[in-house]
Image (cartoon, rainbow, N blue to C red; front, side, top):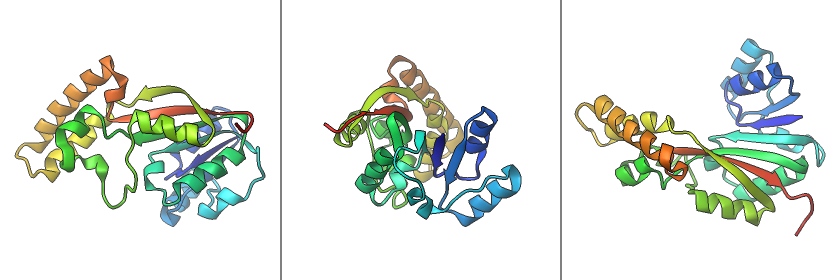
Length: 199
């Protein structure tokens, strides 16, 4: 069984169901939950749904661009640890402030998205955070195409002329950088495995 936290309008959870997974989904937005119900017949729970299941209920938990929004980060990771089966997987996608585009735009980098984004991460801090909560980082995967969208927005924040073209150009350079060094990707997917016992 899998759980998708911050499921939005339900597209990913619906795809997982079509792949044969049993899926539980959580979403804060009432409007997004209604969309998922209407279009995919998904019974998406609100935030309190994180407490509805006993320990060891899920083989995998996913958070796609959600972790940077969470107020109680440590408490949430402790709960995710409890909910996963021994050696279950936690898959987290977050923006990477050490990316090529993050370093180029600095305070204008759109993925800082203050005040909606409460936290900012690099590959190093993500690994340390996993270690802190008894997870092992087993892989991380680049999301290089995020750089195009983020760079275009960043150019708009700078009030640049031809922001679309400049953003596409920077996005292309960032994409090329991420091909050679995935730690420079604008966003990264981190795959953690729960350690099967407490250290």
